[in-house]
Image 1 (cartoon, rainbow, N blue to C red):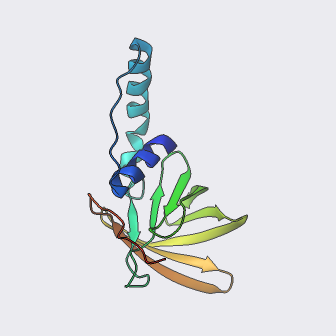
Image 2 (image 1 turned 45 degrees about the vertical axis):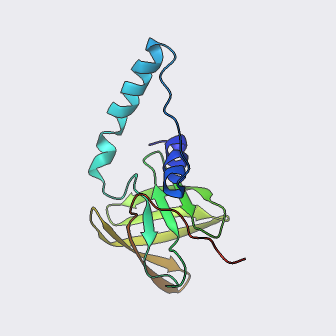
Length: 146
């Protein structure tokens, strides 16, 4: 899944309709087929290409979302902030890191299944545990009081 696909996924979560387009020529069909084949290996990693919603944040607000794309892009979003695109990497089977405002955030994957993710973020001398679940579709952010 590339950045454009992530934006389309976010639009779907937000409830914004999109129209599928057909390839303009046969070469585009071949390129699309190659993209699908290239991403097959990514499907083995349950972290990738899912909308993860944080479940342990303020219960009065919808949880922030993160999407770890197979191309190394991290999409972070919430119902009250503008989305952010960052670079991320899987350091090992049990560790990831990403760039946020010029700082590298390191996190251990405490637990990961097809539907649940627990990260232990290393923030200086502190460790913050964050719990996520896969977003339910369809989902629309509620109207937020401003």
